[in-house]
Image (cartoon, rainbow, N blue to C red; front, side, top):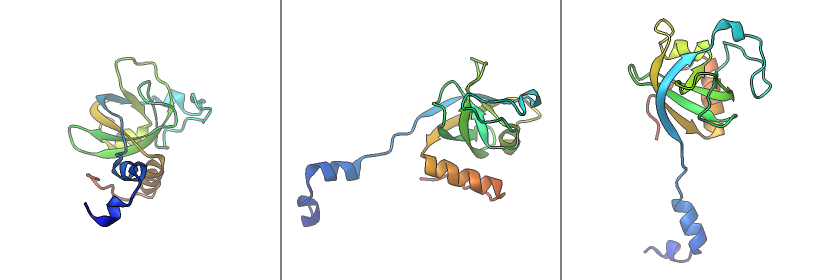
Length: 139
């Protein structure tokens, strides 16, 4: 073992090896109907189909998630700010997010959903708002 690591207290050594745990689920995504535009969400925010938000009963409110369309590989980041009525669906996206995932015409899509750190989620949503291309695979 290198000398630098030998001098580290065990708690610091363990902390440096600690991995960030992310929650991952797969299921069916749908998107909000326009009739919800302007209504309050579970967090009190006003729903806007042009913002990168979503409803889910499977992730905590305020969680940022990376949603991947399993058919075409398209990726979008959203913030969970509402609960949903469809128990058979995993997530209900704002229309802008469904458009990026290319499933608006079909209505639903099979997706993989991964929770991400808030800083990453916020950064990616800002990039999406700016129209920047998202990297397909990150570490």
